[in-house]
Image 1: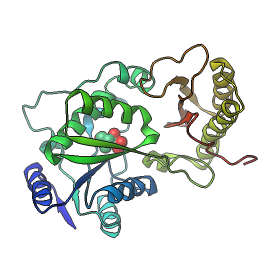
Image 2: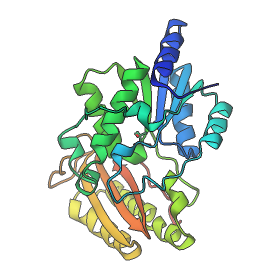
Image 3: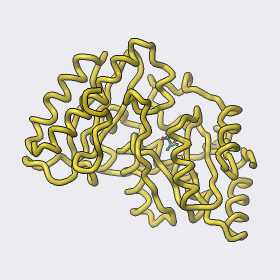
Length: 290
Ligand code: PAF
């Protein structure tokens, strides 16, 4: 497995892989790899025979008071994990390689980036789309895998890829959860035992919502109100518990249709957790009675 740090060396490696007849895939990450990331690698490897994984804690997607400085950085362990998982190349550029002196271009997606996390993290998606566009430009035609835990990110990147005619097939990979239902995230490492226990309120609230929807409930308020109350009772603060159209992320109709996203963002201690289910598509995160 190669470890590459410079953009041009990464571009050359991707071009060489394609020239040798491989289908190239990229799994963009910020490192601190966990089983959720490895599920992205596995999904990419099922569809492409040469998989690169990028590790880059992207400064432009963090707001001034967010956790850029303390975001976990575990490159050595990440590289070992990638090697064991059959990744062909890890691209781990330094900050100056992705944002060299004099750079001034940003990629901004409109309405899809505006609701949910866009309301609470104003610079976040512009930073994500900028760095992902750079990664796509370096990688060339490829498949790119993203987790559905960051559902809005997946929709925003899909929108950008369509709008800019980028030669990239986007693959959304299902959320991976701990046995007790907590969605895997690199930020789970920040949680105290108490925060973590309270964080399970999200999976419980989402599970109850799935059951209500599957039992025929189509009144948005009757789904959101109990979910919000359950998360609010456990969380330190709640950014949102909201229903939106699963494709456009626009507000849902007065009576819910066949597929709708229930998305949650809340803080437990200082740690912000996000999670979601697509009602009408996903099963409950927790088994009945859990
Ligand atoms: O999901 C992430 O880890 C990041 O937002 C991404 C897509 C790697 C861009 O920095």
